[in-house]
Image 1 (cartoon, rainbow, N blue to C red):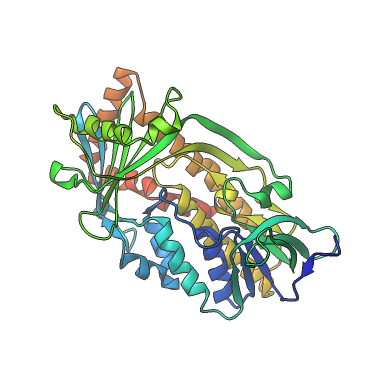
Image 2 (tube, one colour; image 1 turned 180 degrees about the vertical axis):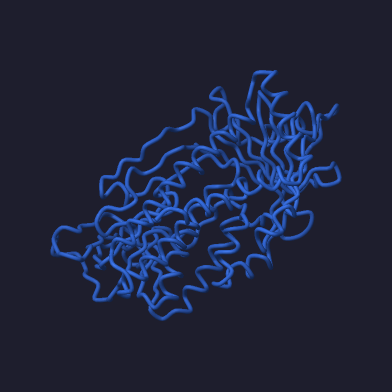
Length: 420
């Protein structure tokens, strides 16, 4: 270690790398249990991420004891009914979440973008004296071989105004959680393979204040089409009617610049509207990004653990990514607190790995891929069969309930809890 590295004297039980919703939630669960925790974040503040924003019933149940659900409900949008649609056939099925009223206290989806959740978590975390969040602290690497039972974390501190290039700082703790996203440097630092692939097409997100509700659209709708499927979400805004956000796949023939031009967003909206005369929509946001289906080969190496996108990423169809990351955070935070406090030995962390990695492989990856294939199916006969299948399910209360138990992730949590 270089002699010009500053060493922290702070006593940390856990260092969390990444101040997104998963990292902050991990830290909050630990802090509430009395575990000293330090969160390190490369950015100067919580970030503005306009992708994830659907919260399923089990997630709301998990966050309720922390007081997080109540705060989310105050600013989010309840979605009691969501839709399956087809661009040619129109409405296929209304999925009434009320079918789950005997299975959950939250028989609906809640729409709230993650950039509105992170300030809630940060404020709650900052109420604990033994929790600290350091922004502008970029993770560089770690070493868990030189001192038994201790991980040394190297960070570049860019927070000082008079040191814009940053200064090297070292922190130590018995445990480190990597919650630093799909490009996780924590994962790379312990040489964990990120198995899977990247989809060839990009995804574009376009938002408008145009109100689609009078046209019969629910606040959440998935529109199948062999040329370009559409995922529809209504999100909170400064006022009514909120933001109507569409996610669509983008072919390789278009550049990012073309996709980010307002005429591209308008073309998408007009195609869904089937407008005879093109309508000029008020577009307030556009973005384009790559989509991956990957799962870390290991969720734990020694005293380093992974959670959220650091451990797994998937396409957004079904709203599983952020929810599964939150499920990771709750599971890991509770188990690591027990280990630190001496209520359990380290084998409990292997249970975390078994539960969360298994569910991600069997559920999140498999179903999100299936959702994508269903929406983009090109074979006319298979498309007709799928539409008929969904209509048949929607006509049966019990079949609807079974369908929603899976799509709402309730079955995912049941499967995780069955693993011992």
